[in-house]
Image (cartoon, rainbow, N blue to C red; front, side, top):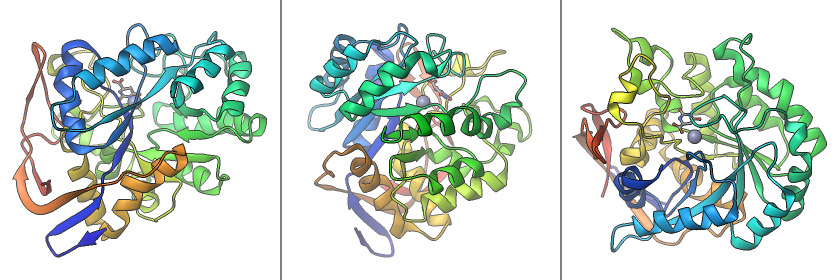
Length: 346
Ligand code: DOR
Ligand code: ZN
């Protein structure tokens, strides 16, 4: 990493948690990520979900086809865990270069209805993953309606994470989009088989952002933003230099009219300005020197992939994030649209 007062040059970063959808939506958003990142772990929550190696290979090709000429961007593919994903599919996945399997507790979030109803039903598949070295990516929230929405990550640790770690000690697990102090403490104290991604929005905002002056649907995502003490814990973890925490935007595009709706969709669109948003968060914490590890090294190391070669440069420059970008026949509103950012990708 090289740094002057107004520039920051780092190894090309990766996004270890990204939603790019499909069709016209995919074509609209892939160029944004390809400008920012060398690789991205592609989430499999399409309709229908990506549950076979064949589907993952076809999806990967559609993503590659949407990368603009002159940019090089490599999708890293994942499968969607269901109660019935066969262990044989895991062996085929490993052979085909699929790196991970995503666990959505059924009903936890967008396109999760086909998710897991009881983790014990998947144990044969998890055994195959542990044997093949595939990562398990966890949406870490219980779906029990009697548990308060804001407590669902903490309860997930007790009810799901701890038993899972006991039963599969050498399965590599990523606690995705960590949002709480409890989550940070859990990952920090776990062994080297457990890591976590942290989004830019959970580093920059607390739950007040959803309710300031009225309801602001573009700040609504799952797991939902938490109170300030949790945000502070996330900033501390991300900027600590610990290799157990790394960048995953969870950039999740939805058409603006479906977010500004009586039943607004969960998801923040951050891919357009991802690295700038993280730079903002690290800068505010006085920790720009820790950004490269978080954004460009720790994730690749945990995935067992080579670090990228080449660099990107951020410049200190105040500029305004566009309020909307085209999204097929709809529009997409990037998080923080119309507001200033103080770093810009060269
Ligand atoms: O806010 C979210 N949006 N959280 C998720 O877990 C899924 C994502 C999506 O796919 O829209
Ligand atoms: Zn996600």
